[in-house]
Image (cartoon, rainbow, N blue to C red):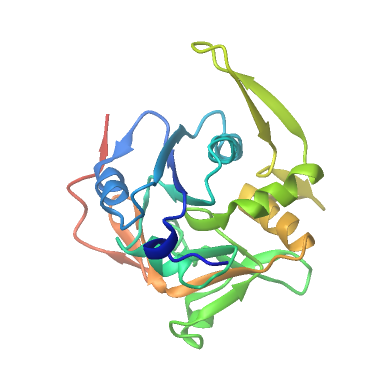
Amino acid sequence: FEISWESRNPQIAIALLIGGDFIYKDMLRVAFGLQKPVSTLFLFEVKKPDVAFSRNILAAQALKEKTEWIYYLDCDVVPPLNVIPRLMMHNLPIVSGLYWRRYEGLEPCIYRMSEEGLPVPYSSEDLAQYGSSILEVEASGAGCLLIHSSVFEKLKPTVEQFDLLDPVTKETLTCWKFWEYIVHSNVNLSEDIVLASRVKGLGYKIHCDLSIRCGHLTSVIVKDGVYRAPPLTTGKEV
C-alpha cells in the first residue's frame, strides 16, 4: 500500500464506538486531537444492540463513503495522538495498537493459537521477549485497529448481507456481517476473533505494533498490564 498522506491525502474514517448511554470525555479529547489527514471522516455508533452489529454499521458507512482506511477506536481506549500515522507507516492491511483488558488478569488484547486450536491472549510475560516490535498475531482486539477497505471488499461475498432503513431520511444502508459472534465447539467467540479468522482465511495477516501502548479507561487506566493510579477525574458522563 502507498499510504503517505503528505503526498496523497488518503480518505480515512475514524469509526468511534460509543458505550451505551454515556461517553468518556477522554475519548472525545483524544479522537478530535488525533493526527490525521484533512479529509478524515468521523463516524459514530452506539454499542446497541451489540458491538458486532455496531462495528458492521460503521464499516458499511465507511465503505459507502468510499474511504480507503477505517480506524476503529473504542470509547474506552486511549491511544497516543500519533497512532494513525504510526499504524499506516507499516504498509499493512490490518494492524493494531496494544491495550490490555480492564478486568482480572489484565491480559493484552492480542491472541495466539493454543494447542487446542483456539485463540488465547498473550501474557505480559510473553510480550516481554518481543520488545517494541511488530508482532504477527492470530487476532487482535478492535479498540485500536486500522483496516484497509480492500479487506472488507474482499470479505463481502463470503458473509451475509442485510439492509437498514433510516427512519428519518428513508435511505437504505447496505451492511455485511463482517463482525459476528459465533459459538464454536461450545466456545463463545467474540466478534474480533471471528473477523480475524475470516480475514486470515482469505490470506491476510494480522499484526500488532507493540510500541503503540494505549490506555484502557475504567475507574483507573489499565496500561502496560498494570493499573495506573490515581483514578481518572474525567470518567463517564451522563
